[in-house]
Length: 178
Image (cartoon, rainbow, N blue to C red; front, side, top):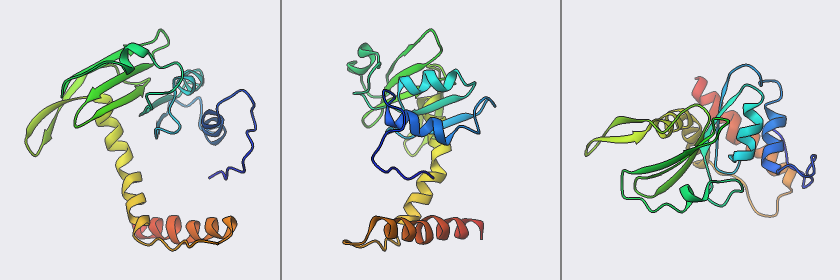
């Protein structure tokens, strides 16, 4: 965990990219796959992390710099997708399920796999299936933390952080281990 104090350590580098690179510093160059949320995912980060022999998969915001505009602006019907791959191996994909989803991956291409749903089988891009499987534990942890929200207004930020670490993360992790 790293607390953001309002100052970017690396000027000229996006804040999310510098945060990810500093948190991953001891885990790079080992062939790992990093799954990121839409705040952290960008094409810039994908190229930087790929240079360190690490892969990335994540939801991508459509207004990020370096996104391929033909993929971002594509109008899709339900169940269809459009993808573009860079020469470095970064794939940006847009898929329409209930709503449009933008994804970035350095592991997967635009291949699809069948998934069993309540209404029958459906084809989804493999990167979306992998992302959903890997992020399910984080989403469950966030859901469990939301049930016991004890933060109040007018509490100093450092007290909020301590309360969040104790009542949120530590309690949920202890429950999962139990």
